[in-house]
Length: 135
Image 1 (spheres, rainbow, N blue to C red):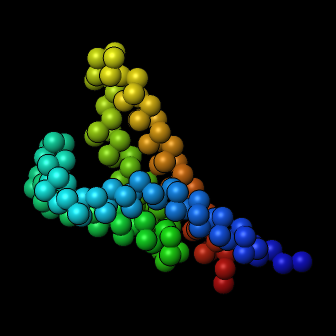
Image 2 (cartoon, one colour; image 1 turned 180 degrees about the horizontal axis):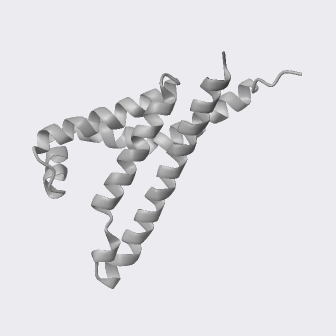
Image 3 (tube, rainbow, N blue to C red; image 1 turned 30 degrees about the vertical axis):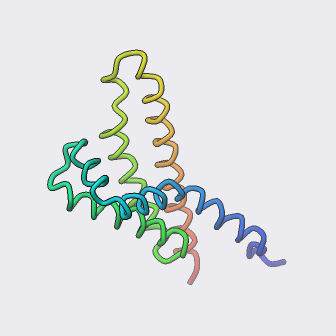
């Protein structure tokens, strides 16, 4: 009996990876199409030089997502998005600094992003294990 996943499972896995990357694909495309807006976002978060950070974020969001979806260095793309998400979460969703009316939505965002970080770490780990097990 074969241990290879069926075509249906491979499609489901790819679709799950697409869903995991959806916000990064959308974010990268939006930033690329509105580069001035991306620069404004980097400025808002105190990242300088903002144009360089905007370009790097676009390249990371799109490049790492494509690595995950294509399977080429999937583990590296997933690890990169995990680190990026974790850093961006602590930069942009500092719920503990907000007054009570704003704290709950920001806390939800913070913990949702921790979940995304965990998902990307699992993708990286599984892909790394699969590659190490295949001679």
